[in-house]
Length: 133
Image 1 (tube, rainbow, N blue to C red):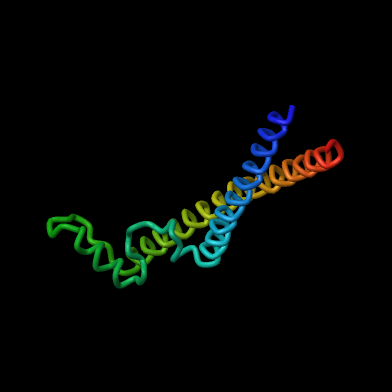
Image 2: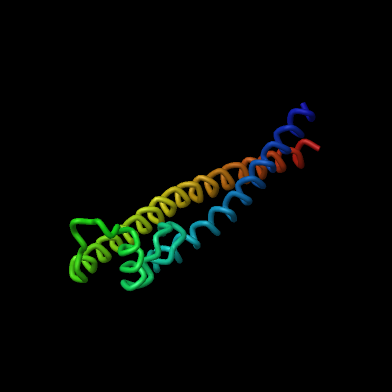
């Protein structure tokens, strides 16, 4: 009987330890997502395309257009393209940070529940050992 209690105690404290480690890692990721959400244009979800300024975008667009192109967009059309590309990057970054925050929030909640349930269980086992000894 004592061997079963020892295994149960080891299991219970192991789950508590894993829950604490999971909580800390998830909390760090959640904080990172909150920071990314505050500035989605510079978040880790940003595309590789350089949209730091319109001039950079214009240079890259003009390099992509061949000399034989039938249509060369003017600055107004390029500005619209730049604004659309920039908006897409921001929306993609916001979606990524929201998704990450929801998933991390759920994992955080589950780790707290697991810790509380197993910690209380360990306390009941410990009280049972003190009474029986």
